[in-house]
Image 1 (cartoon, rainbow, N blue to C red):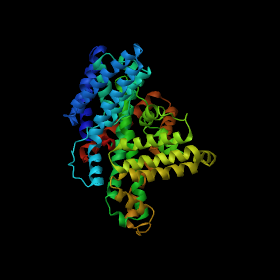
Image 2: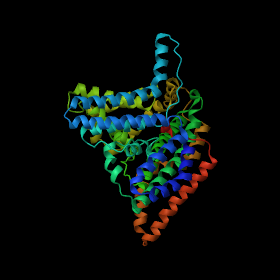
Image 3: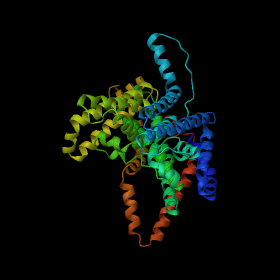
Length: 472
């Protein structure tokens, strides 16, 4: 859906913006809601009904929660929150996990229950968590219930971040939803941020993704060590620039319409521990699980045994949230074990060690995690591990390894710089040293215009290449 989504934006965004700023302020949420439904229907016409149902369910539940709380009936308010969660999770479970459950039941008991083969509604994991956060925020008193169903619908279906996040909790934009103030400076900032994300996805993620596609599709039994590591490094860059690129585009579009979404990535590959990595990677998901699962379970305020339990629960849920497959559950468990070890043992040693030790330790473990993440077929993932550590007998390198390294060395260098704050800092210093602010602005605009035209040219000439997180 990447081409159709971007095509929608390129063709209709100027019209949408003109319409949005032409109508009275009281109509703008309605415009956003209507356009967002069209945007979703562009790729999922049938499942728009599902989104509207979810919107109606949580809108009414939010009103009931607030009504019962004001009357002092906390038990009934809790019941409404629970009802909302059951309905939302039932929908998510049915569409996302039904076939996974049926397949495992068939395998375990030798049955032949037919699979449902349901198409997964795009972005259901993201907007389900958003709608659940609404009733929870209202119950906790962190936001007032939204009386205007159109405004609430705009929050649920908001097209800038509808498909792949970031997960926007209601409390963070409740005030903005009703009283945001759009201005030229914020709009300009939004355009720049959108172009940055577009370049990340189209020019960086797509190109390095071709390297991963080529290597991952080879016979792993004959894959040399160097080629295997080049491949998983390519995947690490692809998933980062793909997902952070979408987040940048979503945040940028939000700015254009007057919203300030929270950041979703903060240079995660600079981390010196797995704990730090998960404070920098997919921040909105980590925040959601911390506030709505980890802390309600007791967080750090309970015994060591219960803290271990809490972390295990959160990371098993984090893993399975990403997909209905055993590799995602294993991936979540892998990080859960690492975070438990760091919390009670390793972090104190990492803090004392030289900085490079933490960097190497973290990058190595993260690259290992991406192998688990990338292969739904656990046996293929295992053979790829064997190739990475030379256990398949294919040796360290061959002519193909040298070719991949030589032809992609410059791209890896660019990706490495772009994955850190170095490029941003250098660009900032360059603009500061320019004698004329106007010249600096012209240079900056020329850079973003260049990204735009290169990206459009690439999309026109390229094959279908969806955002990786659309499937979640």
